[in-house]
Amino acid sequence: MAHIEEAPAAMIDRVASLLESFVGERPLTLAELARRSHVPRSSAHRILQRLVELGWVERKEFTYTLGVRMFELGSQFTRRRTVPRAAVAVMAELHRRSGLTVYLSMLVGAEIMHLERIGSWPSASGQWSAGARQPVTLTAPGRALLATLSPDQWPELHFGYAPTQYSIQTRSQLMRDLARVRDRGGVAVDAQGTHHGVTVVAAPITTMDDDGHFALSVCGPTRALDLVATITEVRNAAATVWRVANGVPTLRPRAVPDLPPSGVELQLANGGSASG
Image 1 (tube, rainbow, N blue to C red):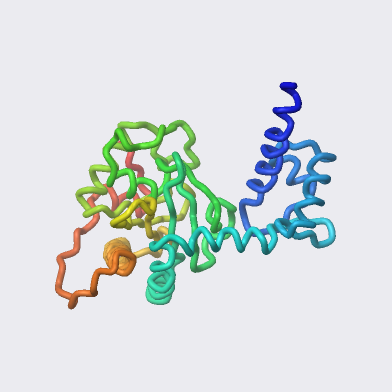
Image 2: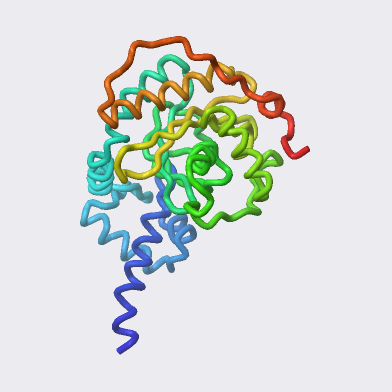
């Protein structure tokens, strides 16, 4: 009897594992999907055949991609939330002005999920794709959102994974970084902490209802990114999304003094380390 009750749950787990393996934008082979999902190849093939029939997965020759049905379901998720609807036009304008890749991300447990991306850089890793997730402590969007929450509201944080020598690796490093975020008016900067040569600048977007925790960010090459100007651009864009999402009329622009990055941030942006 116990076996009968557990079988449906086990099958759902396998389906979920296969679907979650489609992180990135390139098609995947059966062997790659079986390896990523830890589902036996024969079972993966049988499940994928059914998902193709349902429109959740598409097959082209020997590779698979997510199907149009998954896109429809994802679109329903974003359409019923005010921030994603409000952000698209603002993101497009920010990308046009800055030339940088722009992201809208959401806090999901102890990770950041990228909901929208405008721009194509960087493209070397699936972790930068729309739908991909990154640890909240490692990312600028994640730390921008943690800075808005009290520690008792935080998800369970995990440390130890460090893709570069500039990554946040301990709770004490995180607390120091969050203090800098608050001093900067809520804007977080990650210089090469998730990938060498990549700097990400992020600002939180709050809502007047329980719509989730969102952050707007831009991503660009560390050596070429104007950190002071980018901090201002991201802060202003996040504020614009907030106003649109919350139905607040746009005010006449007025001069607001910029908060310059600290010496530590400038050092990081130029390839230095913050661990000292």
